[in-house]
Length: 228
Image 1 (cartoon, rainbow, N blue to C red):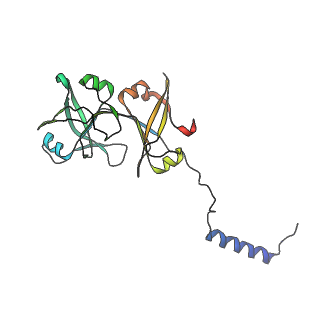
Image 2 (spheres, rainbow, N blue to C red):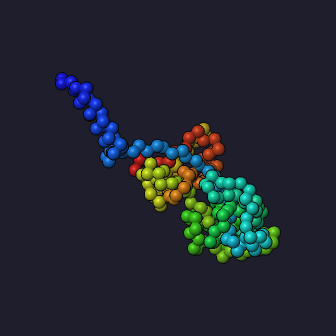
Image 3 (cartoon, rainbow, N blue to C red):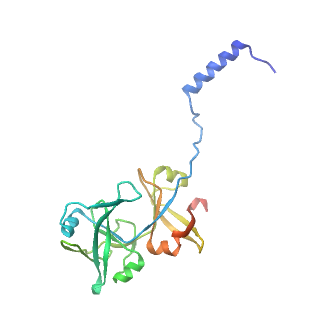
């Protein structure tokens, strides 16, 4: 083994330092993806309103924030409405979620829909064509919707780094496994919705959350099709 002279050792140390500063990370280096923290939330029945309908129903220009939701910029409002369906069946106090939207949308669980006497389709949020309507009754006015009542399909919100970790893209489908003391439930066809500044969060409706005993779950896991 050939030993280097002190001068040669110093020279090589200087060269290594210059190279490390010039090329701090090799081009071929692979970044290790960190598993993101998953939140699974029950999305109870609620309403999204347009600015116009806020004015008609409550006689005011904007909603009153009650509390922030998990996703930044979204909130539960102080305001609630009565929903009236066919044959005058009704749900007396349905929460409004903000901010306002271009179209008014009512999201119900299956049990809610039965109680109201409506048969809404399972849809991605915002896909309202062909959906039934209902009557919204507020303290200052009434709005008769011709469409807008849906059962929101189960979905997961995620940012771009989360999508990279799971190897999925917007509009893909995943599975959600919920392990609880009473049962283990796997939900199929969870819609992936990817966006900027979005926290990783699955939304289930009330019926789905109760069926899986989500309140007592010991673990939750998202599974991409490529992982199966």
